[in-house]
Length: 312
Image (cartoon, rainbow, N blue to C red; front, side):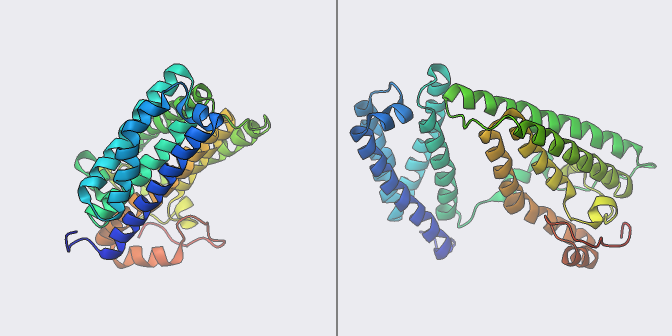
């Protein structure tokens, strides 16, 4: 293990792979001991044939990764992702093995994070903000109209993608894979109400940012001024609060627990991967003004008394 990788971080990765190896072994014992487990996770696939490949590449390789083998880390992470993708295609075509897809999907995410911890010593979150998504201030304009227009187009695109297309696909797959939870019908009305509130918060926050900050929510065209007016007086990231609320609301309207989980996962990714990078950029550009704002206004929970003032 290279000395540049913090031992504590690598240890977390090794602990995960140890757990994955034991969980994989336990799962294979259940597969051969329980028809229900075999049917719900493998469908019509031949368990013996699958085990010939999966036991060495998943169970044994995970154990080797737990012992510190970087080759095994790459092998088991690559195999886990491959199996998750192939199993998802199989389940979508046959309507079988839906729960197996979910288990392998979770294992894939865990394996990738653990692999990053062992190889890099951390999860390289900065990779998601490269190229066209790198932080850059928006170009100065005579009026805020171009920024407002660009922001509205961004909202339409991202809402259509993250609140429309992706949730629809997830809800379809949930039905196709036979992993529905059967949420009560009344949650749809609750979801619609939450969606309207979240949309109002999102639009008002976007307009405030584009008019007073002279920029857009997109990292490649960020505001030129620090905004603490409108919804930003109450909470530091009202657009993130709105978007996550909208995602949960769409899940309720579709009656899909997978969409609700998708929204919750998005909140974790944003909070632990994107937000630290965004706040580092804001601190670098606005210095003490941003540090004072961050100290007075919370990220997720609105303060009871709004931060007074306008763009700093």
